[in-house]
Amino acid sequence: MPTISRFFGITIAMFFDDHGHPHFHARHADGQAKVRIDELEVIESTLGRRQLRFVLAWAELHQDELNENWLRARAGETLQEIEPLR
Image (cartoon, rainbow, N blue to C red; front, side, top):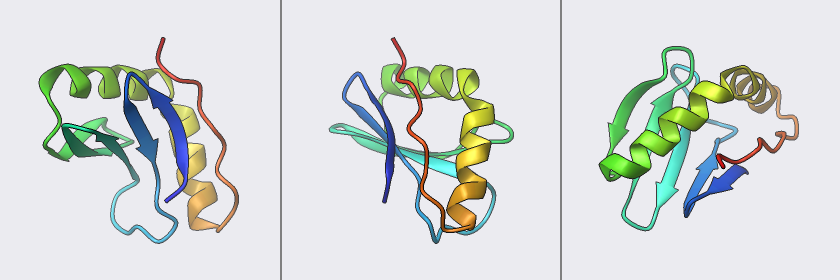
């Protein structure tokens, strides 16, 4: 599972063999989430409210880059790191 960004104790990753709608995974010591890229919709989450807000704010800023990485993952290409939330 390639990590594409890290911020505030949150790790953002994508799987090369994931199926379904384009999405990414966010992991934190207190939980995890799966977020759909095109609609920035939370598919599932056990993250705290604060961490989830950080993840969604970051995703909104980097939606185009996330889409590009999803296409790279589908093609088996190396994913690009994305700037963390500051």
